Image 1: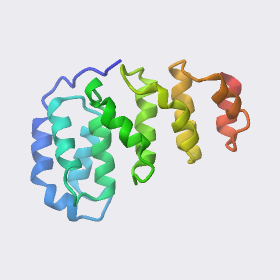
Image 2: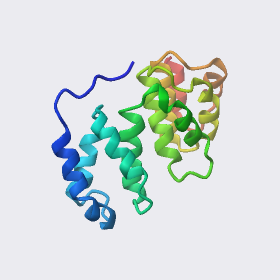
Image 3: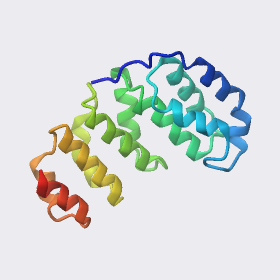
Amino acid sequence: MFPPVFPLDPTPLVETVIELEPVMYSDSSHHGNDATRYLNVLGFMRHPSVKSLAKRILENEECPLHIHNRALHMFYGANYMPEDREAFTELLLSESSPNRAILFHIYSDLIGRKTPDIPLDLIPYVFEACCDPWIRQVFVKALIKADALPDEIKAECTLDASKFTRRLVAEF
């Protein structure tokens, strides 16, 4: 299910971020400036202006990785639409992407929310490609929440290196 569109107009925040873009791209601090704080807030808002801002940021080649990751979350995590399926699938399958961990996390969120028209056929691929124990655990939690945990993945989770993932499937 898609989350509802944010009921208030986020335009003032979006405009402020646009004004602060030069600082946002030059500041090496992950949390040290107002623009990144505003991006954190906007990252949970489903609204066309937020998605447009995210696209603007993603298209900027000088964007630092931590800002790029926030924009990915704004664009796909909060504002995923069926027309994004092909591009999102391509990103998920890109083995050279420096954003794989955040993409796997976004995919987990989309599955957990039972978002329509996400590429569920990629569940086995993401499970195997996800080597970070915490992200894998988040992914398995989302699959359980959405009642989408395949039997073969459940069986593999019983032998997972992470005791937390093993415990998750044991309780399922």
